[in-house]
Amino acid sequence: ARQGHGVGAMSLAQWLLLPAFVQVALTFAVGVRMGRARFRAARAGRVKVSEVAVDSGKWPDDVRKIANNYQNQFEVPVLYFALLPLLLATGKVDGVSVILSWAFVASRVAHSIVHLGANVVLTRFRLFVLGFAIVALMWAWFGLRLYVIG
Image (cartoon, rainbow, N blue to C red; front, side, top):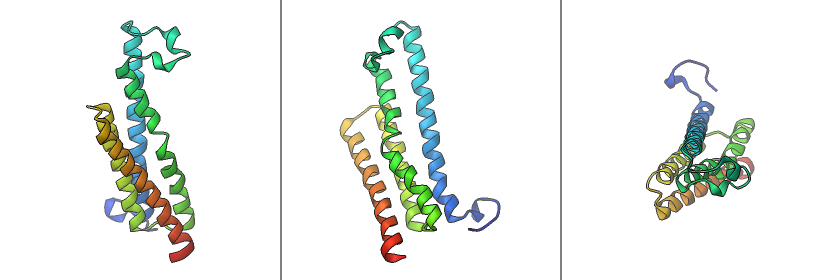
């Protein structure tokens, strides 16, 4: 791994992890949006706090949509985040894993934009499947690099 400063001096490991920071930022952004939406709904009397304390399904639909997207950030991305330290620890970071890392996070950002916007289910589903396939491909590529290709 190269040492240095600036974008031109970034190592493959840094390029691999940069989209992870984008995914973390997305998760925090959606979490903040969810918290604000819940606070506003409760303050406006659209929901009783005592009702949602035991049943999150009682939130208004617009608030549940944001909460569902937030929950999504802890599903398939867990497989992505589990792979990153393995790639780093084994020294198997390469251009393919970096490109796939960026592609996965781009699919997650696009999924969130659709989910939190017009929420076109078919488009959202296609973006989910794309991200799912990319993270599966990342794991397959890592397995090939670790056990077959070197």
